[in-house]
Length: 46
View 1 (cartoon, rainbow, N blue to C red):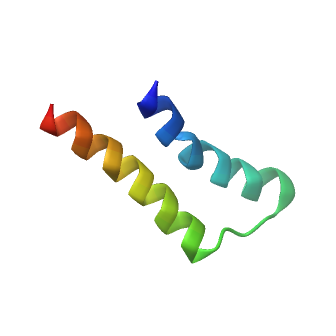
View 2 (cartoon, rainbow, N blue to C red; view 1 turned 180 degrees about the vertical axis):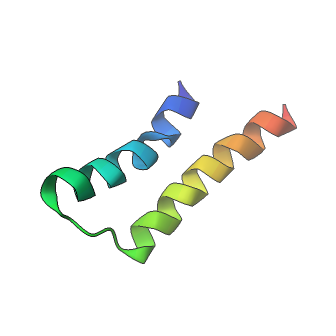
Protein backbone atom coordinates (compact mmCIF):
# COMPACT_ATOMS: atom_id res chain seq x y z
CA UNK A 1 0.00 0.00 0.00
CA UNK A 2 2.81 2.44 0.81
CA UNK A 3 4.35 2.36 -2.69
CA UNK A 4 0.98 3.30 -4.18
CA UNK A 5 0.61 6.25 -1.82
CA UNK A 6 4.19 7.40 -2.43
CA UNK A 7 3.78 7.40 -6.21
CA UNK A 8 0.67 9.60 -6.04
CA UNK A 9 2.68 12.82 -6.53
CA UNK A 10 4.24 11.37 -9.67
CA UNK A 11 0.79 10.93 -11.15
CA UNK A 12 -1.01 13.98 -9.79
CA UNK A 13 1.60 16.66 -10.57
CA UNK A 14 1.66 16.01 -14.35
CA UNK A 15 -2.13 15.62 -14.45
CA UNK A 16 -2.60 18.94 -12.64
CA UNK A 17 -0.26 20.59 -15.12
CA UNK A 18 -1.98 19.02 -18.11
CA UNK A 19 -5.61 19.55 -17.10
CA UNK A 20 -5.45 22.78 -15.08
CA UNK A 21 -2.26 24.40 -16.37
CA UNK A 22 -1.01 24.50 -12.77
CA UNK A 23 2.77 24.82 -12.88
CA UNK A 24 4.33 22.73 -10.10
CA UNK A 25 6.64 24.48 -7.68
CA UNK A 26 10.14 23.28 -7.01
CA UNK A 27 9.04 22.39 -3.49
CA UNK A 28 6.29 20.05 -4.73
CA UNK A 29 8.67 18.33 -7.16
CA UNK A 30 11.26 17.82 -4.44
CA UNK A 31 8.57 16.52 -2.08
CA UNK A 32 7.41 13.98 -4.65
CA UNK A 33 10.98 12.86 -5.23
CA UNK A 34 11.62 12.50 -1.48
CA UNK A 35 8.46 10.43 -1.04
CA UNK A 36 9.38 8.02 -3.82
CA UNK A 37 13.03 7.84 -2.75
CA UNK A 38 11.95 7.03 0.80
CA UNK A 39 9.81 4.11 -0.33
CA UNK A 40 12.59 2.81 -2.56
CA UNK A 41 15.04 3.04 0.36
CA UNK A 42 12.64 1.21 2.67
CA UNK A 43 12.12 -1.49 0.05
CA UNK A 44 15.85 -2.00 -0.45
CA UNK A 45 16.54 -2.19 3.30
CA UNK A 46 14.05 -4.99 3.82
